[in-house]
Amino acid sequence: MKKILFSFSAFVLLILIITQANAQAPQAFSYQAVVRNSSNDLVVNTAIGMQVSILQGSSTGTLVYAETHNPTTNDNGLFTIDVGTGTVGTGDFTTIDWSAGPYFIKTEIDLTGGSTYSIEGVSQLLSVPYALYAGSVPADADGDSTNELQTLSFSNDTLYISDGNSVELPSGGADLDWVISGNDIYNENQLGNVGIGTMSPQYRLTVGDTGLFRVAIGHDGNFNETEAGRLVFTEDISFTGTCGFEIHHDGAANTLSIESGCTNLSDTSIVFTRTGEVRIPERVKIGENSNPSVDVHIKQSTSGSSPGTAGIRFEEASTTNQWQLWNGGVEFNFAYNGTRVAFIGSTGTYNQVSDRRFKSNITDMDNVLPRVLQLRPVDFTYNFDNGGSMTPGFIAQEVYELFPSLVSETPETGYLAIPYANFSVIAVKAIQEQQIQMDEMKKEIELLKTEIEALKAR
Image (tube, rainbow, N blue to C red; front, side):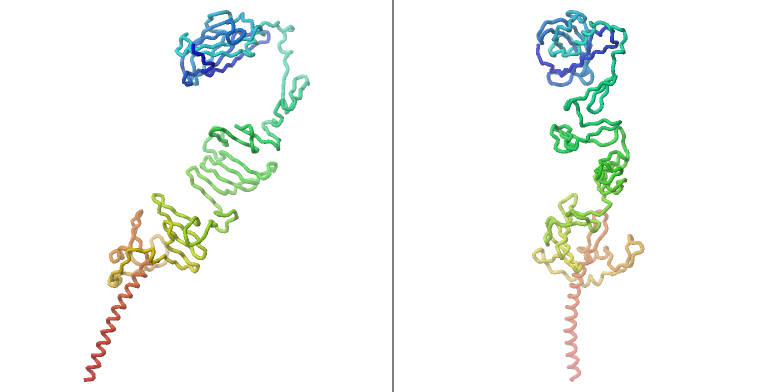
């Protein structure tokens, strides 16, 4: 037989129920065990074969009683039998002299439900079965089963018994730190710490574990509750109201908010939603631990004309393209993919980086004057600007027919856009072309004047 001492994770619950003080003790006790196979897996919902033996003297002592059972394990691999009620194989349970112990209980199991036992366990019967020995004591002398009963009660460090007697428990014999007062339990120990999952707490309340652990605050069995959970940090725990901060979970709105104030704690500082959004109803400062002076206040970590870690970066979701804005001292800068491309000076003038070292494929512009003369300047109002004033400009579709490189299309909407600043370059080119024409016309006029003077002289 393969001996695996309680490899089936057996534990014994020995329960003796005496219904009357002078009645005969029941000749049985309960035995429960959890069964596992050789792979340490639970054996669930399975009929098994079992033999129980009572050994006297030691774990290999004299066999005084043996019986068999055929219990069925439940969903958790657990079964229960009453020792003393099985099919007897050896001895008589009612004649066991429990005072002649020690006694040991030996269990043998056949996982197939038969009697070929392959799993064996032995454990000592320590106390409860010996209560069966109480069945042999004399009956109550006066026949009154109640006059020997007394009531025990416990308060703080004192154990009380009826008729006015009490026993004060010595230090270390009971937990004197916790006090029960009505429905409240409190601890007045102001020097020590409380640990959960640790034997050496370092703080007032320390929660630790070797794996995943959580501290849960909320309702029991309720969903979508407005007051789903609160964690309060108060300035004075003895104050009748509340002044401080609290973390408030609103199950109905699926939000977690930090609130502050006195009494009501109704001043919301920040709100987190379950979908990852954040709402901040007040001013915010980033980069420095001081009060913000505007709605969004950013104190840069660095400054300068080159994009570094300062400012705000806007990065596209699908690519690595990015824009960065930052304060360079006297200039407000714009960078695209890490290169400064424009800035606004201290007087508000917009400047675009135009250094030759940033450019390639430089070619002279073709004549633009004939096309410029075909442009149609118009006044208009935007549809989205109800009641807006008239604005001068061009129609992008008309500009595209003359200068297609100046018109871009928004991918999401298909609307056309024009960089009006670039028309200054077009205008300069047109003026240059006009100047050339004017210079040629001036030469022709001078020639004509010479010829006229010659004709007059004749």
